[in-house]
Image (cartoon, rainbow, N blue to C red; front, side, top):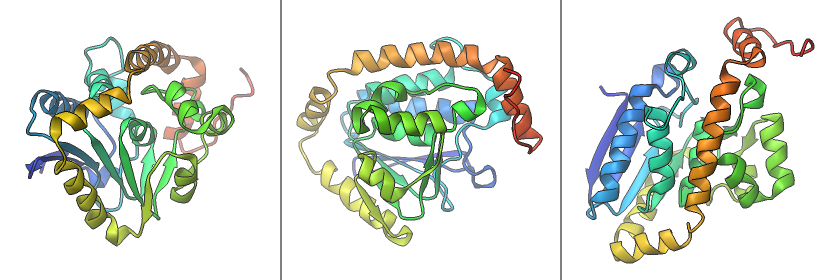
Length: 253
């Protein structure tokens, strides 16, 4: 079974992160598959809605660290950067169905979606600073825009986890439901959006994203600084501590 399942039915393209034994942690190969799906959807008017989802009560635990360190984000044609740019540029209405952990990219990708439905068991987290790293996927621009500077600062600078109810109050998601209702509710929203005039939907979304060039530029800047931070002494200590299952020691920095 593929680590990413792509399914297309009734004008709805479903992208399912399917690596449950690794908590749906994302690899370069998975990013490549998802980027290809988004790029295809952008040129295919039969695709009217895109759904992102995970399996086994997990959205995604973020990047697979071992794979990520072996395939760092350098340049604009890596699998990760292709996915980030395709996500930001997409004119197709996108829905995320979140169940369980949504860590790192699992949270920042939601900022590009048009609707997010989350199970009440979901937990969101952007632990970049805790790993000696920086915000990514345009989140340093989009998060303050969505929820205001002070709350965005709290979440980015502390890297703390927050619940589905908090995410709803911050404006990150649209609806909270029971886990066993998530598939049904998401399907209803997707069917509703898919029933609308496709060209009008894409153009309406594009009008609401007139700052897309700013977002793309911010993603580029973040990637450059993220790559630099990835090889910093702070990140080395944080990642080593994570692998060794001990608290990091930043007292010497």
